[in-house]
Amino acid sequence: MPLTRRNFLKGAAAGSAVVACAATTASEAEARENKTLPPKAVGLLYDSTLCIGCKACVKACRDANDTSPEFNTADPLWDTPLDLSGSTLNVIKMYAEGTSDHKDQEKDGFAFIKKSCMHCVDPSCVSVCPVTAMRKDPDTGIVSHHPDACIGCRYCVASCPFGVPKFEYNTPTPQIHKCQMCRHRQAEGKIPACAEVCPTGATLFGSVLGLREEAARRRSLPAGETTTFSRKTVGSSDTHEKNTAHYLPHTYGETEMGGTQMMLLAGVPFDKLGYPTLPEGSFASASETIQHTVYKGMAAPVAVLGGLMYLAHKHTKHDGQDED
Image 1 (cartoon, one colour):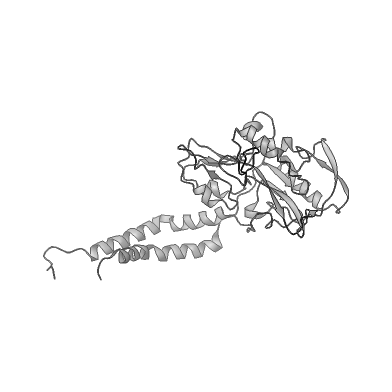
Image 2: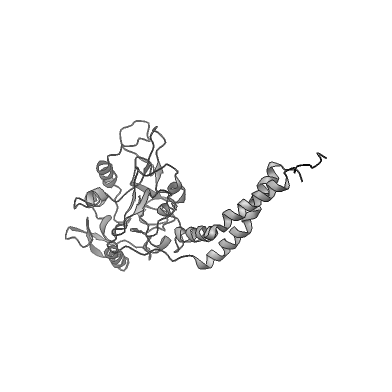
């Protein structure tokens, strides 16, 4: 058999195929458990039914993180980001269907939705980063990015199921950017800027456990009932009253991907609002198990090397061998 590029690659892959397939099959039943919530985990609760689309949170986020506005209209008069980007870490988007007459209604309705980092309990971006530029705080659970360690591989961009980390393409010195829950403000005793300025309490800051309890309380309220909602922080005395909307019976982020520290409430299905339907098992738990199984004892690399050596030996002319 002549040594062509096709045959060379097929032979190289053959050595590792059996090992990789066996490891993958085994890992499906043996995947590690999801990581657990840190002891002092803090987070955000976004209530779509309370959001009025004012985008005060978008402006506050820019001020707190010193990012530049984005213009997507003919006349650059207003900050009009369309989605998360290298300069937009938090954005409010809108769902609309049919006549859009009714707020927080799927048919002939509209709703607002917030997009920013979900701060996963078991984050894919941290799992895939080869240089620990992405890190999860062991106490607060905040997922942060450290540009001094980053090599620009963008594995975090590809791995995030929510499409959060963004790479700058308009600068000769690009970096990865994402919401870090204003950890620099928290170090000064402040709360995230988006929660601080929200006029309705649509974005609420606090302990994850406290936010989960508040989310459960809201979901249990009868629709149309006048209710008191905290602003800025969970349990705050700074409140306002509003008639309760009809909530979906699920807090998004409570179970998805092993849980997230930013959670969402809404009256419109989350997939309509741009959030994917995800399993309870984290992607990191599955991928790490496969990787660790394949490379355990260096089985896969040895198999690949063995295949390459066999091919090289098979197609090498030995001393004294006739050219024919």
